[in-house]
Image (cartoon, rainbow, N blue to C red; front, top):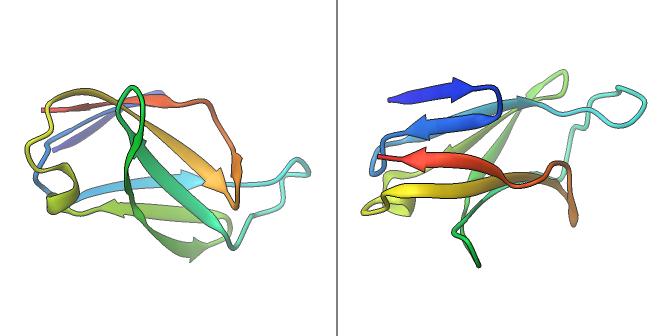
Length: 95
């Protein structure tokens, strides 16, 4: 199960989790390479989702069941382009 409320996500840990995002630059042009999604606890990065570029700036990021198995509670995700964070850390609630 995956639910989105604005930038917050609620998902079931230990299952495949797919997160899709439209990623563009400051000129609203699609970013076609170098994007990633990182999953964090309060202090550290704990997993990196597999990025898949779908075209026209649309990306999907796949977290495997093994990456979230046993996790429960509030964590954080951020989308990055190369070494730059494209957003603040956003909440992801794993149940």
